[in-house]
Image 1 (cartoon, rainbow, N blue to C red):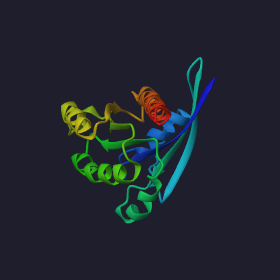
Image 2: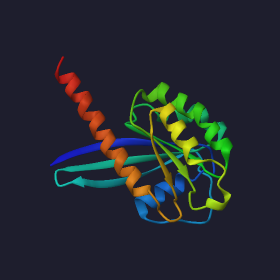
Image 3: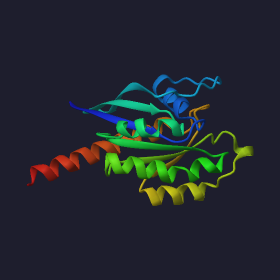
Image 4: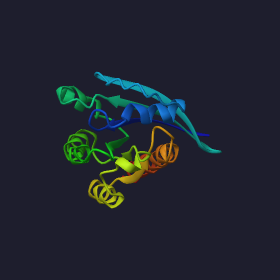
Length: 180
C-alpha cells in the first residue's frame, strides 16, 4: 500500500463557492447559508485511489477578501496543488484569477493546478462560455472542470483527477532526485 499526503489550496474571490465546493467534496453536503471565510480553514479528505494507493488531502480554504492577501500567500508555500475557482455568473471573478495564479505560483512553484468554473447549475444566469474557461486553463497550465457545489456535478471527479496529478508530480520529482 502506497500512502500520500498532500496540501491543496483553493484560490479565488469571495463568493465564488470555494467553501461550498470543499464541503461538497469532503462532506457530500451543501448549505444555502453564505458565510464568508475569515482568514483560513481546512478540511481533511482520505481517498482510496486504487487497490494500492491512498491519499490524505489537506484542503485549505483561504479568504478571498483582498485584505487577507499578504497573510494568504504564506499558506501557498509547500503546497502540492492548487484549485482556482471562479463563478460562471460573475465574469470579474475569472478576470481576477490572473493575480491569484501569479501569487500562488510565485510561492508554490510548478505544481498541478485545476480551474473550476463553479455554479454550472445556474445555466440561465451563465455569463462565461465554456471555451473561455478552457482558454484560461490552458494559459494557467491547469485542468478545467465546470462544477456545481449545489448538485455535486464534477466535484468528485475533479478532486480525484487532482489527486492523481499530484501523485504523478510527486513521483516524477522523486524519480528526478533519485537519478542525480
